[in-house]
Image (cartoon, rainbow, N blue to C red; front, top):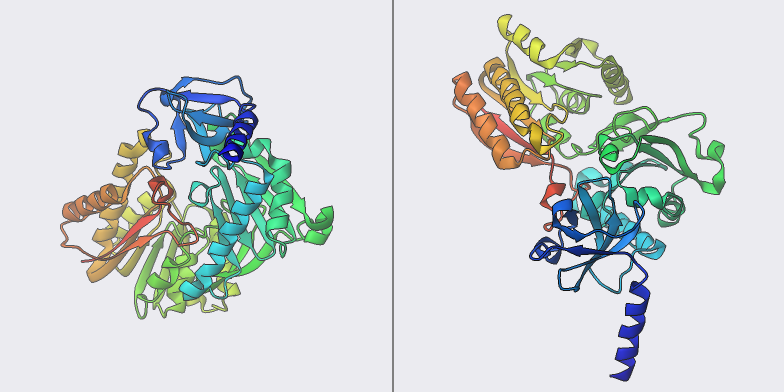
Length: 425
């Protein structure tokens, strides 16, 4: 009993040096369920703490709830990292969490064939890996990192060192912190070399060549770590590309918002008769053509690329009485926040309505939303309304989710953002 009392006293003394965030009565329920977010409205007393500092979160009666990062500039005041009073966030905890995330990805290679020989994968998916506000993607020997919260911004030097320690076979970590989410934390964009093995950028290869050829989703992909989309490319459709490609044999396919061609390549490899790939970005279409070459697809007659706005060109195709056997709709995020959900749903409905009108009898639509604010039930309702207005009878053959290297914690449902439906008319 005496030893136990000494330990408790020592822990209390150590924890007393941290700023305290006291919550309003009744606002501790989400933290007790291990949900990692604390919003400003739940905070009764704000600490005198710098942005990004580690704080101790307590209930209204002073009971311990969590350790987290403090962010006074954001409505999301605290991002919780630990729910144990003895697990104070430090470099050791960061190293442990990174290594654990890496082990979970290694386990995916045995569970899902698509990951067995992949060289590109998400290693850290923020809150769902116990590292809120941090994204780490792997492209061969390079890590591409997004720091999205004030806490990891404050400890960026420790993060840089720890990444190379946690993943000893990588040569460098490059930062791509240019997401809009940083502005909500009072942070500006930040890009550049974060860490290199031995401190030498030349040895990492990033000083002379920023493009990597990687394998994921069963395909080869040319990825520009410095200038590509997001952290280099989109990895969240890795399991969905081959699933849709397997449906394409002998079919005329329309790939809308094709980006750098993940679905286009999968459909052509799956034996599509033709693919019309549509995107508003010439950079994306150029990357698509590079990826066709990387996969040895040289029959240009089977693939036509069109640079145009998706909404207007779908209407052009409709007015020209074009039709397809398989259509893929994978638009960018249309609802950045919950306040934009209604407008986004109108856009999703328009896209899906036009797609349904372009399908031949018996045709299939693989339609996706990557807007986290639009939940799966709402998205299904929008697609159902589009089918009704298009005058077609559609059935759902299967649902899609983000790839399992983008995990979703049961205590953090917001980690689920990508959802999709395969419909047949």
